Every structure is written in C-alpha cells, then in structure tokens.
Image (tube, rainbow over all chains, first blue to last red; front, side, top):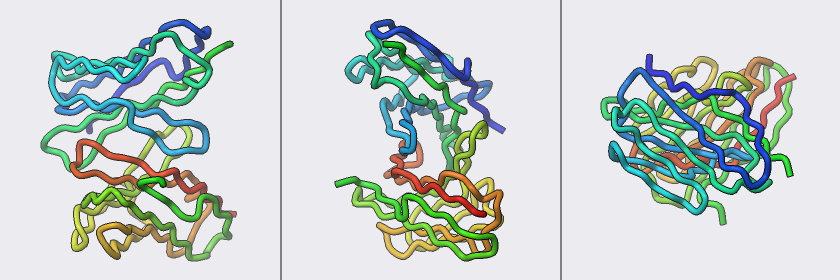
Length: 111
Length: 111
C-alpha cells in the first residue's frame, strides 16, 4: 500500500534556528498536507498543497509540493519554543477515498 | 468555539464495557472520519462516512461500530472494550477527502 516516509523520528534545534522536514513516497499524490500536533491535542492543519511545484507560506512556515508529486517539504524559520510538537505529513491520491499519513517528526526547541 | 468537538475528552473503562465516543462539527462538512493514534503507529482510519446514509470501513474497523446521526454528528462505539483498544481517538471532517480537520481527541483507557 501507499506509505509516507518521515525521518528522522525526532529533531532537536536551538531557538532561532531554521529547520526543514521532508516527506517522501514511492507513489504519486495529488494533495500534500502538513499538520502539527501538540501534546494531548488533535492535529492542526498548517498548510495544504494542491499543485505540483506549489510553494505556500503560513507565517514562518513554508511548504512545497514536489515536482515529481512524490515528496513535500516543510520549513520553519526562526524557530520559537511554541514550535515544539509533532509534525505530520499527509497525502491524498485522486483514486483514493482516504488520506495517507506519515508517522510524524517530533520537534524539540532548546531555548 | 471549536469547529470539531469530541466528548468525552478522557475516559477510563473496564474490559467488556460498551463505550460511545461522540463527535460534532459546525463546519457543514459532509465527510466525517474516525481515527485512532498509537505511539509508533501513527494515525489509522477506523470508519468514515461521506454523508448521512453512507458508512465505510477503514483499515482497522474490527471491534468498532459507528453511527451517523446527522450531517453534524458521527459516533464511534466499542461494543465490548478490550485493553488493546486503549489509544487516542480522533474525529475529523472535510468538505473533500483531500483536506481534513481534526477534533481535539479522546484519550481512552481500557483496564
């Protein structure tokens, strides 16, 4: 079946640093989504990408839909302590009735 | 007010008990989903519904049932809870399959 790969499982950065996360697949997706989950809460949609090559920003967050449709990245600039959490990617292939989720990357930000 | 609400937020129950988790949304979306989240396994789809008369099994539906009482309400039931159903449960909604919005989750513990 379709799988989304996110690695590493955890990332540790210093406050103020930029960080980039990748999500890759062996299958093509028509939509890429990035979610953030805080402890004890539900995933919150950060950015949705609907077109290959699309680059979209949401504040300090920027995400891109890869040209091959098999990957996406999320960049966080000038990190702050509240960026701590789990970042999930998700993809949707047009033929499917479901989303495919990555297992997430846990981000820690040292003050 | 939150667009997607889940009740209860936390529940502890005993093996063999019947449990119902409820989800309500004010987003006016036709599509609703139930997921469970376990450490290391990510989000897995239990059931989904594309409208009031439509119910579909997800990848892990055994031991669960659902009811779509109205466009805005989608309930998940565990007829006879067992310890390996201890998990975080999330409801999600969407106008289309490719973009989903999650509720805050229910933490269920089965003793």
